Length: 430
Image (cartoon, rainbow, N blue to C red):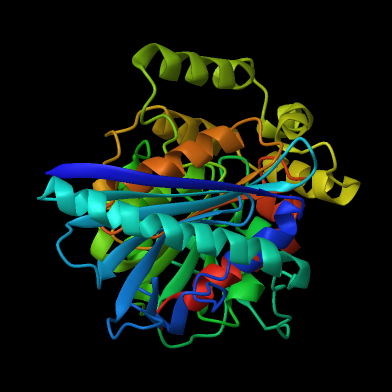
């Protein structure tokens, strides 16, 4: 297999925000070489553009594989139209320059059985990229605002619980057709931390937030919890609420549980949203996991409860711009956790059963983390997003940094979080 690459870089005095406002429209008619273009979706809801070029009768189709407003970057793969190649994967990124303008880097990797064919495709791609970059700079002056999140009416939610070993407690929205959006909180949280997201998502699909075992109104099981127990609980929720497929939305510990479920039941997921974490302790060595466990258990072993050390934990969780109201909410959710529950979750988290195989993720994935997250920094979560892009068979990955937020980014910046979440949920097949 022969591989070749073409890369074009352009510079402009236009702001990167203005350039990205045009470039982010994957199915927009901004390239001068395009005669017609339309947006399509595949069976998973992934965005596909189908277009023709001036002077040609060929229909080209490309699927969006990666998108990030915060990084001003998108990637796509060729589906049909270019003869004689096996793979054509491209990425466009808009960056700021020291001079205050913008830079666009547009590159494509081409694979073909014949080296001459790969080189020929790259040669033909170069002027297409050059013309596109020139058009983006020219149109940047006619900047369109980034779409804002739609305003939905408030909805009624209700609490329910079921089962005995353990009893599981939920807050649920009115039932709708299609998948169930299930929210999973972190070690220091509870289902009430998702109220803003629950009421927003509930306008689009069925939605529920779950108290994990031992949290809130849910009870612990008879034995030490393992991740397979959490996955079994998710299956119980799915059956109880009559859902065919799920969209799991996790925060920190909940993200690790959601990814663990995706490893076991990818066919049941319509989408996966991972906030403030993903791999957890699954890629940590034995010594690192043990050090993490021991350090977190020190106050518990000394007879304290989470309420005793909640103030110090909130200082780590909250971003520098967190309001007093936000800090109080985080403090209350942490303080409400029984010591036995905290110990149970911590032991589960530090005893992972596997290293994740991202090739099993065949559903659209959205990853978010707070700009000031000390536990799941943007560089870490962005790196995991890139790994999923590289390893998934048919990747559809979005990554966003939530500005001015710490670890519990959905609580600190609910409007920004909800805007991205609803854009993601809105594209999924109902």
